[in-house]
Length: 300
Length: 300
Image (cartoon, rainbow over all chains, first blue to last red; front, top):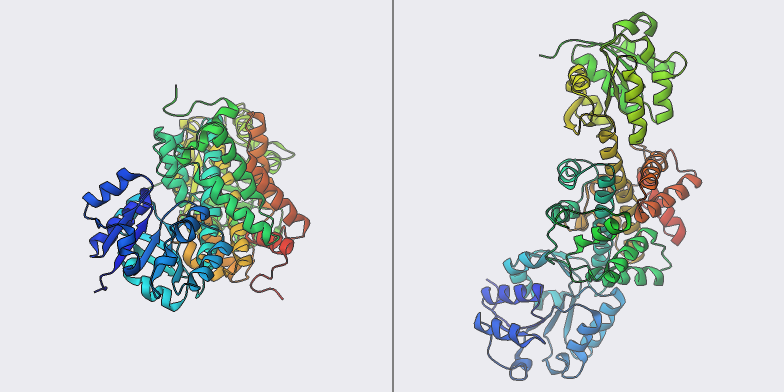
């Protein structure tokens, strides 16, 4: 049995809400925080702590930060009313956003100055797995950070990859994964729409290619969205300029040329320019379809 | 039971030899032909027909063409001593090379002028599956072409995708598959070497990413070659400028923009320029490693 902890989850979006629910289910006293008051109220109604953050800050064992960006992460931890200076020594921060590895190293150092452990812990798996406590976590940090965060990791994750004893390695692996996933989505769309110009229909594409050397996890997961014309945003286009931007910024700092990632990023930028930012990322197919004058399934 | 046929296999390379062996094993009288005399002699010693092509041409049921290019395919079918004009009406050609869809349509038409059925039948699966008769075939052609070629398809393939009633659709699907596979190889190499600049070792890359959203069939198949430093050519770099060239030529004819495929092709061109054309296609990692000054596993 894991010890029951006092936990705060910052960010009750698609992923954070599921993580907070998973913490509750595991028996942790869990306070949910979000800029959207309705999400906070909903979580309280689901069994979340009714206390204010000021009341519990000093008693917190683990803080989980499930925001979108490095800037938001820094604001939660060290901004106005930042949580880290309020925490007692020995507490842990589990930082889940996709951020540059150097940012994670900086946050670890600044947390250490307050006696707080920092776990660099980007997540993967989507909202459905978050709700079930079955995420994958690409984690790195000190032995003490892992030890303190373990009850929360146990609650939220099916798989915890332990990638090293300091912050940065977790975010590096996440960047590698995002490079692949982001390119694979755009390439799937490029191949599917190219096939359409040659008479290959999306259903047939999916039936055949999913059994051939060209398949990928992404292809099997996202191509059905195009075949069905359903762009309900399970993962938004807007994520990719951010995440591939992190990859390319990190690559540039390392003197590393990443031409395929760069080409994929441009396609996402076109998608954003077309106003598709809040659609499912499979909607990148609409960029290709528009360029060549194709009609995708479900379109007029 | 399939009927026993008189079969000729043109091209006894890695794929063709396995197909010819599979035809023999299925009980077909099989003549193997290749520009390399040693391969022809080896196949005869394995149980292949000892006759000359001139002796059997008029009795052939099915001709399987397993050469590399459209030019070689055309030479086998209609060049000097081309086989099609020698065949009796009702015979079938099974054309396995990766070729442009329009080329396949042209070959079908020219075969039809001789009363010969043409099956547009690109293959996938690699040399090991070819030897076991377990290839995947992306086939299209007339009902009569499928019917006549069926005993040979049964011998060589585990899966036959029947993609339409005329030539072109098989080659179109193959082009779609090659677009994905070719981009996925280069992207795997881009991600793996980018990871190395951030301290992610190839073994760790493979362990983690193969369980995450960034995985692909290609990644799981080819990344071990890099992690083990083994570039024994199971599939050569040289294939990709040819196959991605077919994709981009076909795309250009359709007015289709394929920027990610184009970026990947450039990386293969660099690999060829580095003298890596005959190495395994996972050696595209050496392009990235050279550019940033990394040492890959197995290198000095």
